[in-house]
Amino acid sequence: MRYAVLGTGVVGQVIAGKLASLGHEVAVGTRDPEATLARSEPDGYGNPPFAHWKAAHEQVRLKTFADAAAWAESVVNATSGAGSLQALDAAGAANLAGKTLVDIANPLDFSQGMPPSLNPVNTDSLGEQIQRLFPQAKVVKTLNTMNCQVMVDPARVSGEHTVFVAGDDADAKKAVSELLVSFGWPHGSILDLGSIDAARGTEMLLPIWLRLWGAVGHADFNFHIQGGHTAA
Ligand SMILES: NC(=O)c1ccc[n+]([C@@H]2O[C@H](COP(=O)([O-])OP(=O)(O)OC[C@H]3O[C@@H](n4cnc5c(N)ncnc54)[C@H](OP(=O)(O)O)[C@@H]3O)[C@@H](O)[C@H]2O)c1
Image 1 (tube, rainbow, N blue to C red):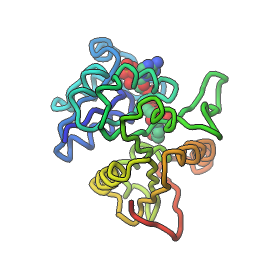
Image 2: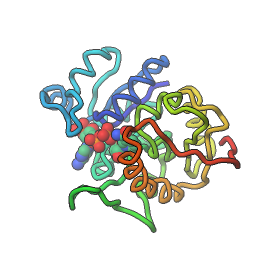
Image 3: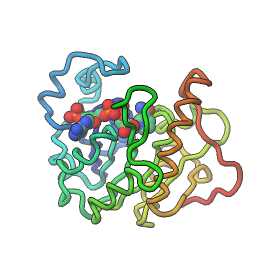
């Protein structure tokens, strides 16, 4: 499968690297490939510049958002929540039409400092905004409720734990569930929450996730919903 992973941050890198290791063809999408490769400073979390990761993953292409989305059969949104609509607009509605769009982003708003708030929240969600703006894309919200290393290596967290999926297209959710299984998620750990408006709830888990991160002292933890799992 040809995947476009929109996003050059740590999440885009981790997802793109995992997809490539599974034998998929992968293009990472960015606003300006030359500018992205020219960055020499670590990101806000101290991660090395994108070019370091790219040098270790030569088989992964780097394209503009539009070129990556046009080239791909399936698209992953791993851009910042505040920039996701602009990034997807740059990717282009025509290039997203008919494709599964895996949305991992969280609409964290850092404009008032720490801790971030959510925007949108409560009566809307980023997942829904994306589905409304790109009605021909098949948006599946998933993986946004855990650290990115856990997304692609669930065994980092001991015991059973849960990954949520939400979206309006049953076939797209099935395809994403199969992708999650290939990442190492047992079928029984995948909990289908129904339509895309369930993204309100999964995005609103972020404030408690951030508090848990502080309380636990590391990011290798996850939510576990005991009982009631049905594979999508
Ligand atoms: N860190 C985690 O473990 C984790 C876990 C769950 C969910 N998430 C979510 O995953 C997403 C990615 O997180 P991250 O830390 O890897 O990266 P990030 O720093 O949140 O986002 C970086 C990406 O967003 C793009 N971007 C930023 N502003 C933009 C704008 N105005 N227009 C277009 N594109 C814009 C950047 O484009 P350029 O490439 O052009 O610079 C870059 O590709 C976020 O939504 C985050 O909330 C993160």
